[in-house]
Length: 286
Length: 260
Ligand SMILES: Nc1ncnc2c1ncn2[C@@H]1O[C@H](COP(=O)(O)OP(=O)(O)OP(=O)(O)O)[C@@H](O)[C@H]1O
Ligand SMILES: [Mg+2]
Image 1 (cartoon, rainbow over the protein chains, first blue to last red):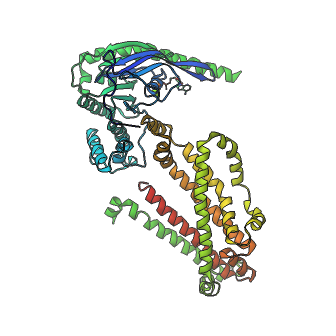
Image 2: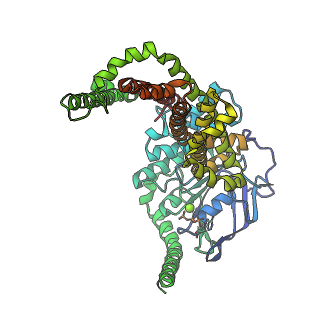
Image 3: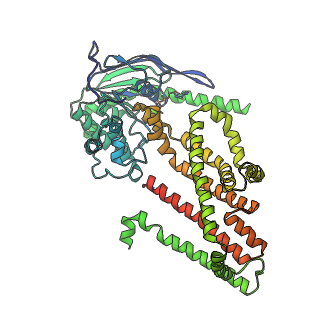
């Protein structure tokens, strides 16, 4: 059952709230087993904003599913506040890459969804939902259905719904990937603002360097196949940050550094895929 | 007027198209009437619409149309309720138990296209000459589309919505009632609508075949008396049954899903 997040377990020996240890995920495919995530370990401190960045297909979503408890067939452990989890955990709130609002519920009822599960009385949960709707800047749209909203607004509804469950850790998988650049930047500002206001521990999965540098305290760069941790970069930029920081010199240096790391991986990924396609064609021709 | 259309689309939208539909219908009948009057269509094969309209009064007064209408209507209603309960239930069970689905899906699909109405003698033996023969016939013949559409709707629920439910730690019953079922509802309604069509066709068909009760029997009798205008008037009442069902279903669907 879902209960309001409260500190029941005492903090782990070190101060990390999320500890991901030696995660290995293998998938069986028709062309044989592939290692999607290879021995990934990371720690997230309370209130920290950590991003995981990597080229397409490097295993980011797979890692997201493991940390969220949706994928149980893996090696290694995930610890939340000192507790090893097996399956979805109430301390972790997930925002998905795909559009995930409930089209049959109004914005308010979407956001109140996790509160409904706790058995909170209706009047109270509507009030709570309103609070989170305002937080993501959707006031005035409380009684609309997702079908009447834009893609960016729907993604904000998903975010508000997850925030309403007051997770200790907010886990997001490329939440803005499907949005246009301007919306993405503005929404990034919003998320950052909320994250700072709530001191929300956040793990963001992304393939967007600008986004990662703008928001994160630290960035984990992943390699392509097998998905390993290549480097962890500390982002030492002053807060509060907005999308304006994107123009600064320090920002540019971080972006260049991470791009250098990523380019190697991304081009390896592309070569890999090309080889794959070529073999495929040869196989088909003979 | 335009303002009202903009602000309250759900209310206003339906009116003009319905008028156009009605107008087209009237135009069609006028054309048929004209073709019959000038002798292009033989009036002993197709009675003029004016005769059909003229025979309404006779059919209503002499043939107890309302009693028959109510009988056919209640047969359809009972079959419809059975269909919804058993069909949706069956679809849910098949979705829940993989083995059941693998075992049954193919032959349920095969049953959907089988001329089940030909089995009416068997039903007659089991249920006798009572309204239950019609009800069960309609029910059995209409079951496959309801089951299959329910199954399709449930299995077609977007994976990410299921994952949202899992991430919020829903129990299996919450997962069903709060996510799978509402997501599948539009498809389930398509199934029920299809099912009702099948049921009505089979119910009226069996009434006609076994010459017992309802509008089907009336059509049979009038046709045998070669009272063509009367036959067509009776058919109009069958269409009325169908229209009533569709309107009710649409009301229910709008009430359940006010947003589309
Ligand atoms: N269920 C599965 N079965 C087999 N292979 C899978 C499965 N899920 C993912 N993979 C493979 O694992 C690798 C990593 O996939 P994943 O979705 O985690 O990548 P990603 O980094 O999230 O990519 P993107 O940035 O494009 O979303 C891919 O090569 C993919 O083909
Ligand atoms: Mg992904």
